[in-house]
Length: 76
Image (tube, rainbow, N blue to C red):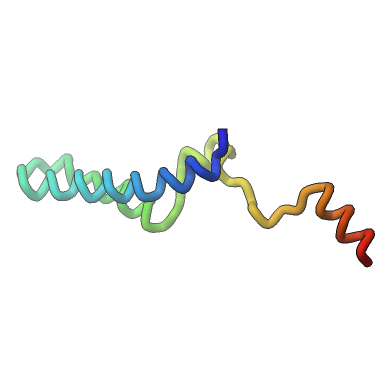
């Protein structure tokens, strides 16, 4: 499973869910829907608590592979 694709999906999903919950709270007057601020803020900050816990989505794209580092050494 490509966790970078999952991370790209999660951010807009969290923003949408947070917005929908806040709008539902405004429309119905039920205060519990205002908890939608949590996924909204987390999505806007691009922070994923689940990814932090599982350490699966925090793949650093700048990290070189062994092949790239070997190629860079041979070029020098």
